[in-house]
Amino acid sequence: MKSYAAIDRIEGKFAVCEIELVPVEESANLTPFEKETKMLDISIDVISRVCGDIQESDIIVVEHEENSDEISVCGKDQDEKQRRIE
Image (cartoon, rainbow, N blue to C red; front, side, top):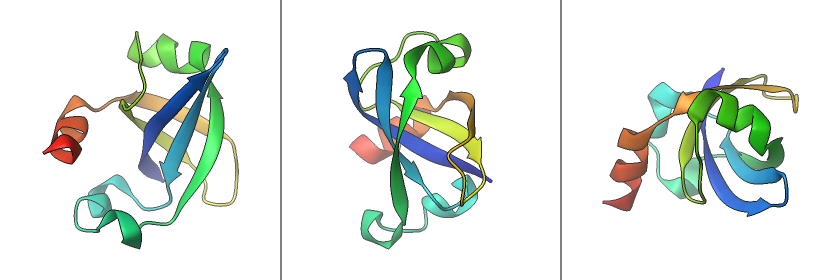
């Protein structure tokens, strides 16, 4: 499934991300309290290869299986970041 991951903080060579366990298409229709999430450390190098420079609070799209920690980074979503700020 493709879902959003928020970069919570950067620790050394890793970004600590809060990954939503709902598809991207459903995310906007749910409140933050209705979304199941999990925390996962992702190498900054892996994210940067696809997204370029990153910072805390960026929203990235990842592809993953619900019961696995293996992910693929698909890109950064500036529109979703702005929607969450508003």
